[in-house]
Amino acid sequence: MDPVIFLDRDNTLIANDGDLGDPARVQLLDGVPEGLRRLREAGYRLVVVTNQGGVARGRYGEEDVDRVHREIAGLVDQAAGRRGLIDRFYYCPYHPEATLPEYRREHPWRKPQPGMLLQAARDLGLDLPASWMIGDQPRDIAAGRAAGCRTVLIGGVSPSPDAVPTAVAADFGEAVEIVLATGRPGRAGRVETSDLATLRRAVEDLAEAVGRRDSGTTRGLGVGLLMLAILPFVAGLLQAGDTAAVMPWFGATIVLLLASIATMLAGRR
Image 1 (cartoon, rainbow, N blue to C red):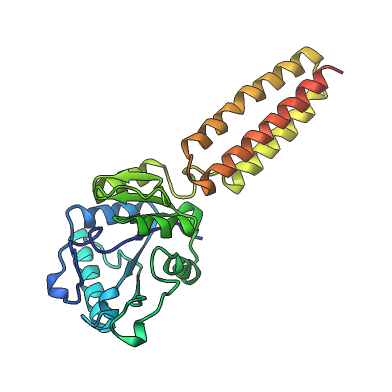
Image 2 (image 1 turned 90 degrees about the vertical axis):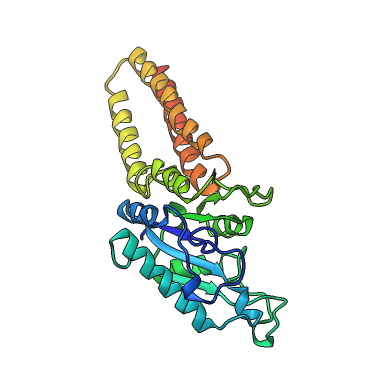
């Protein structure tokens, strides 16, 4: 499964404060092509998820949305010097107050609902806990959190108390730096299956070693494990607010604490 960066469209990738159905009006924001290229080179897939209520209001049709998205993809590829940078675009044309009856309803794809992100995960085989949502509105953050992703709110909008982002950035370029600073995909803020297996083997080796050592040395090993447990505990605290990232770290802390207690008890025998 691949990690992905989910991207809001308007005022995240392009400058747009209203309904946009004309590809001639597409204007990429500064730093977007370079940022997308860096994210792709770091191993992330790129998926745009956007509400398009302009369709529901009769301002333009779904074919116009597709034309705008083709224009965005072409401009990004041209500026970044790489073809196919953005993997896919998803959009929701529905709105509960639509002018056109056929689009007048709430829909699970409409942010802050996570429907578009979940559909992309099914279509592309995405690793949601290793992924991010970047957007300029609280609804983007809410959708990302509901899908189990980490999130970055950009553009100076105040976070909603109901959807606190993992991080806040002034612009898209800063958001990219935050994502990349977490390390390679699948490692940042998480304990991988391979990590837990390594930890388990280490505990087993320690248990075998305990059987061969005197009580003083065994108690010393227990104290060492206790101090080692501080590391994943602190790592979990640094991910506070993101349950998907926090729980594996705290799980590793508990494993180390239990191993420490068992080792020190063995040293008293």
